[in-house]
Length: 176
Image (tube, rainbow, N blue to C red; front, side, top):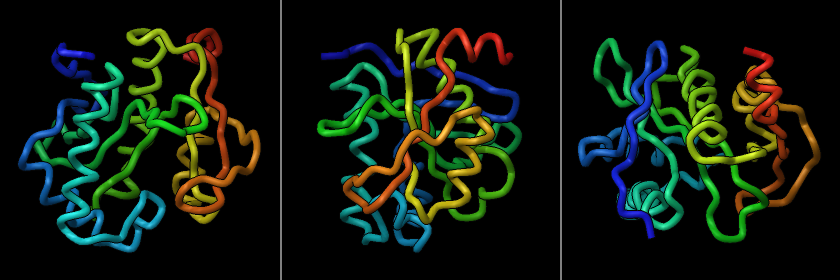
């Protein structure tokens, strides 16, 4: 079991950090919004709390997990991105989700790009995927911007999804 603190990473506009209690309110708003249907919502506050708590628990049990995304300019919590591999999942995944009001600013791509680099450089992953709902065109675009290729359609717990394969460590390094 991992007992090490969650590392803080940076990207040009984001801090990728451990979740804080204050992050719950924006996550509860996310899980109340219909956009969360691609991420297991919508749901009420009690279920949102359970989902929120899973992010920190994933770090404890796997030694890696999703980070809270914080806008470095404003300090605002804008979403999450990171490493995800719960029991029963297809493969280790790069995941992302943004709170209402944070879409369309490139935060998902920037956070996921930094998380992917960390997966390879800091956590020793040799491959990574992203599982994206067939209906979530915005996240499909993020996966493509990251250089991932559509590998196949799969069935997952929230319905049909596309499995995108990310560039491997050597390809990512070569791509810059």
